[in-house]
Image (tube, rainbow, N blue to C red; front, top):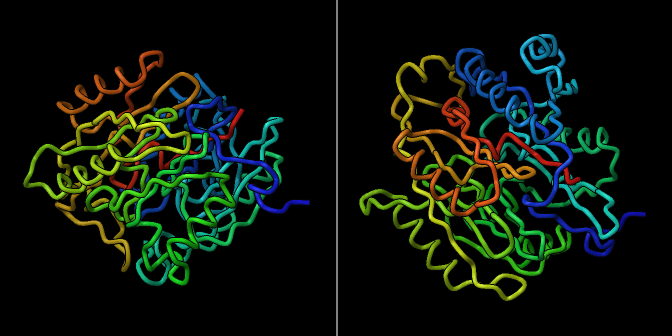
Length: 358
């Protein structure tokens, strides 16, 4: 009988740990993915082709798009027809746990499309709420149904008791307004078996997720992180990143380690073009218009079995980011993925994936 992960001695492993599978979902939503999703699908295909060399790739697909996806994707990609509202598997999929014997279980968080009635990004997220349970079932693992509204992109764990998150997201009134910071910390400790929480005040500037941690910071390994920084003092991101650097420089993780920070440049800033905006069906809620600032970040990458997949967003800064990543991951293969059409949807490589531990 399941109780809670902490009581059952299950914990969330770090992304640097071995993985058996990575899940994605096929992008089709015309109010989020321009030109009926075709440019984003091309970006997903390129990513999946490269990712498939390192891990089994499984793809959730709406039943009415299964034939389309099957005709476009590598034959090694396993397709799973299921209902969902949009393709952000990090946020709608399960958070995976392991125990000392290697048994896997899943956490199914509550989901409200990044804000529910207050400031959610679309009106109906009922199918998204089914995805975590469906993925857990396909993986043949038991699951815990957690009482928190929480998205996977809003937390990063090191696998050794430390969790990183932002106040901007987890304490936002659209998530768990009836819970105090202490209440939320208690739930995180119970469902992820962590001991220490390092809170950054804010995520990346203009991030429509209310500042997910995975768009500003990425855990490389215990005691070591990537952080998006901005060197233009006039840019709103400058003060946000400086505050994060100060907090991290004074923080200690669950094992008492100082945090080593690798500074990644912020791409751009990048903005949506008129052509890109015109390719979208504009709904009432999720307006995307010409000159919208895009929340681009190289920290929104994926570590997978000896490789690091990072977004290519801005030619000049892509080169600098590659050098930073090379120093941070001296024993990994670095694979750049052209990702602007994923960014236009509101996220990047980490947001569209959910890894399953080996």
